[in-house]
Length: 323
Image (cartoon, rainbow, N blue to C red; front, top):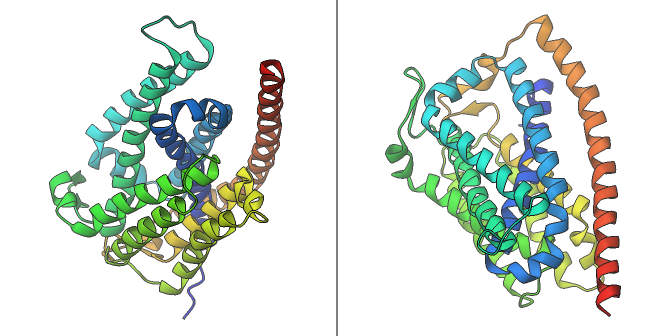
């Protein structure tokens, strides 16, 4: 039986999906910087600042919408993960400082651009892992004491599906990174890595204990497999390497992955519909978010188009001057 999603919950999931798609491209960039720095200078760096700027905007947009939809959600997250949030904020500031310094501030021999970008990449990995831990904990419910608003990392990590989902997701994004940024790798390496990551994360996701709409998993599975299939063919490679198309695939996959759990959280011990605000203000915020979301999405697409085209022109000019 198809469960019709609550429109305001659906909108929140859509914003989260776009946020996660943007964040994922930064995680892909981080792996490229650490493993293929010289190639990243030509193929990755020109995308970092546009993506970094828009990711912060979508993060604020999501938090504001979540606060209006489920007022009790943010206190639960804040109290349960207080130490992690404090660490997250400190690292977030350091991450921003490193990329700003790498791009715009004078460097010397010891603190050079490579050093700063390596710091950015390492911190980005840590922040991504922390976000995945919080997200996975709310799905499985392991480690979270809802009544006391506390979180135990040891209880979380002792549940193997939690670990498998995070590890599998990291492997999956590593495989995606070579395709998204067009890195020079062996032809069959990305498909093998992607399939391995999808298998580990997929099996773990099913065993997190919250699956209500299993048919929804068909969408992320199909799109995930479609990415390396399109990439393997020279005729269709340009389609999947288009940054907007790729992020669209990723956002749709994340949305249906989250929908497969709807309407429950924490191993089916918490129904999300029972947490909704359900007042007039929530309805007004919904309409405002729809209008604001459309405007934000259009402006984001325009910004990406301008920024990416500028990056391409700068790269062409550098190539011509080198010749």
